[in-house]
Image (cartoon, rainbow over all chains, first blue to last red; front, side, top):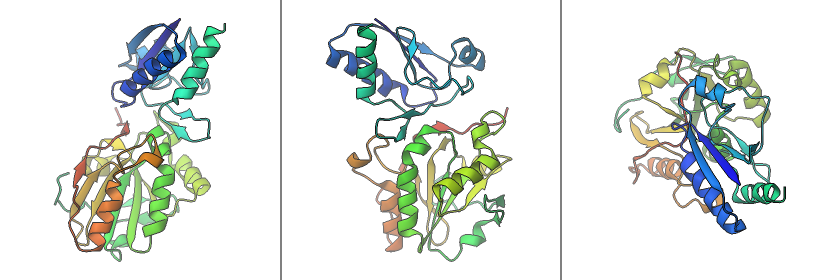
Length: 104
Length: 174
């Protein structure tokens, strides 16, 4: 499995995002290559189809894709299971996505 | 902006069609001025908490939200979208648009959300984040803005005067 974490350094959520990814992998008992990609410019945001930080892709599949949003340098919003909007996905959302990807 | 400094005056349009300056809040012994916007997930994470606080203290404390983001880069933060959000969410406080970003510069604000709490003389007594846990509202241990409000309402000095704000950067014009 390959997980990409794309982040914009001015958004403070990426360190916690990386922790959550490792926690989710550990809890699922899955090993994965985790690639961390820093996005600093609008050009990079467009090249990487980056709508905000953190963007997490598991085997190329984006966690909670939002195709209506433009590529840009900002924090992104995730909708949690209880409907709340947050700057990070929940641990259970990440675990579910990893399980789903593992299951093929 | 340093603790102890006086609030800068401004003249900004609100989503209700009125224009606001500091004198409009002079009847309240405490002023909570906060930089805010529509698109930032940290603002969204804190929105319910800020609404609760504003409703709880609204009779004694003036709450004022200011959006300084550049709407050409972030259309969700346009004045029209501010009006929509304020109406949908029932904001009980003025939501002002700082189109020139002069107010954000004057206050040396850098993030959304970012809170400035002023006493009756409008001297800054607290600056920073709302509380110590944006992620889990039920695990908050320190409510910095609430504590500052409570202290000031009791003519006391807040125990904590500064905690770095956490959130999105203000989107400056290029």
